[in-house]
Image (cartoon, rainbow, N blue to C red; front, top):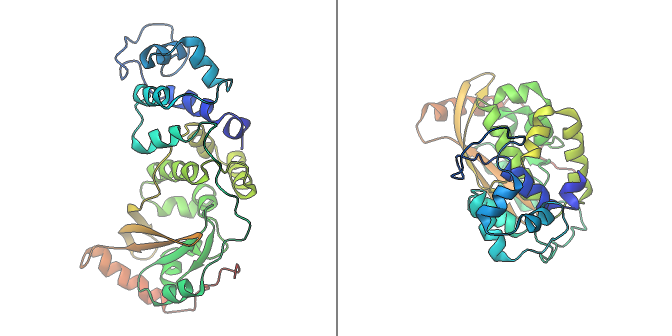
Length: 281
C-alpha cells in the first residue's frame, strides 16, 4: 500500500474527501481559476472553524491527534455519512490497533456441513475476499467462486466476471470501498499489501477508486447478475460472520422469475461434484 495509507492515513483521507466536495455543495461560489478539484484546504478550514495552518498540518501528517470536535466539524464540511464519519474518527493516532491475526483463516467443520445442506448459492470468504469454501450452487452460479479464487482479483482482472455483473461500475466502487473498510488500521497486513499492490499495478479502475478513499459498510444488498445459461438473475446477498470468516449467501425473491431460473441453476449444480474444501483446515 502507498505510504499515505500506512503512515498518513488521516491526511490521505481528508485530502481525497475534500476533492470530492464541490464549492456549490459547500455553499461557496464556484469562483474562477480553481486549480484543484473540490474544495481548497483553506475553504475546508474556514468552514470547519479551524485555522488554515492547523488543517494543513492535519493533511500533511504533522498533527495526527485532532480532537473529536475537530473531526466532527470536518465530517460535516466533507459531507460524510455515518459510515464515513465513523471511519474518520477511527483514523486518529490514539486509536488502539487491532490485534494481529496469528493463525490462518479457518473454515469450521460445521460450516462445511452447513454449506453442503444449503439449497442456495453460498460460500465462505476471508477478510481479503479469498474464497475459502463453496457449495455446488455457488459454483453453478459462478465458477469464480471456487475455493482458491480471490473475488477482488476476479472482479477487476477477469472479463467474464465483469460481464457477469449487470452494473459492474457501481459494484466495483462498492467493492473497493468495502475493502478499505475491511482493512481498517491493519494496513501492514501482508495479504492486504499484496492484494492492493497487485490490483493497483494491473487495473486503472482499481487505482482510481482506491484513490477516492471511499468506505462502505460490510452489509449485504441486492445485485443483478448475468448468468451465462439462464440469463438475468436478481439476487439478495447476506453476510454472516462466523469466527474469523464470512458466510455469504445469495437468494431470490420467492416465486419470482429469478427463483425459477435459480432452480435451473440448481440442476446444473447436480451434474458434477463441487470442491467445498478450503485447504485451510
